[in-house]
Image (cartoon, rainbow, N blue to C red; front, side, top):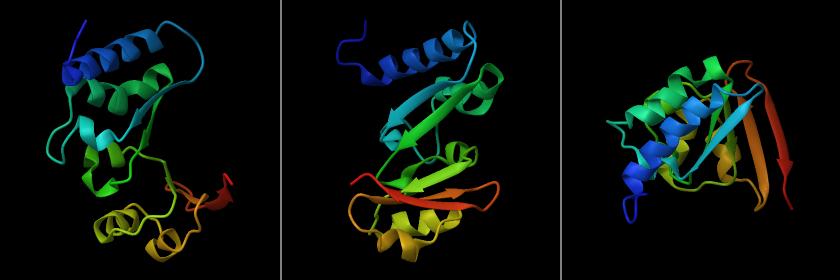
Length: 131
């Protein structure tokens, strides 16, 4: 449908996910890897904004992954209830972690494969590892 046109393919997919989530019960997740590539600090595609800002009405939640959290639009981070971090070392990324309620010193000292999670609503913290 969109050969070579990733921007419009992503917009179409977000729109489809939003409407499809209304057709079934239960929680649905939209995972966007390296979300910063799909938006800018100043602009977010309307279709992604629909999923982020009104998706909860249809039990749709956004899960984002990025190594560059400082490039993620505030309309996305403002809706975030959880911040899960693996080790980050870049100063701009660590500053954004701090702005979102995380501890940059903890995040920068994480061993490979270990993570820390901050609940932005309760202030709770969990740690763990994948290896």
